[in-house]
Length: 344
Image (tube, rainbow, N blue to C red):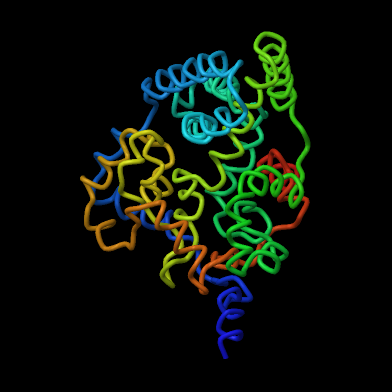
């Protein structure tokens, strides 16, 4: 009996995703909010504080990479988790802001790409352009089984639904986050992606040549550890994993929003992706009746704990929708041109 209870601890109660036939909730809520509170439009646009924060964090990481060059490996691992992991994860969320053109505005797209290249440097791996290419689809086609590559795959659900499996899933989250899109839905590499790769490789070589392998390892480990089993990484799970049936997006209202561009205000962000993170709390203040009754989180650490220990949680705990599109359509970089060519 005790052995059976022990084994049950490692099993999951779920063996499939939550399938919905309805549309994602954000477009309709956006229309309702704007109809009642048109002044929210004034919050839209760009915010110069984004580029300022990104610049400060990049220079802090450059200073740290210099300071750790002669430290022991144990000290480097510790600092990579505590300092580098925090800053690199925050930088990755800055790339999220930049992906929406919120640093310099939609009218200056290349300026946003440039600050994205710059903010990408301490992460050690090129991510800015590829992330944007897939992330915008996550907003427009949320839950689509083919296009939304933020969704775990069936094989992830099979392999990582046990308690131990979910722990491994969290630890390896940065690998899934980076590799899943290009494996599940490979798209043609663009010039900007090649430029992103070139700049990043040159930067990594400069760090290695100037400061040594320990400095470069500090940056790489900061990304690997910071996006894995780290308090800030709780946002990966908190945002869209179904903790309460009937709700597929959750906001987090806690102190870590201060260093993560308010990414915790995730319902607000999906409702208004063209409002900078710094201003998202204003959305909730203006339209509280649309958000106060939605389930939310107050601790990303608790989110990670509940995800790992609750048998109802796991990679399967996501809402999926049957796709309406072909794979050719999903992989296309410019879908509007495909529409135009078919109608001409």
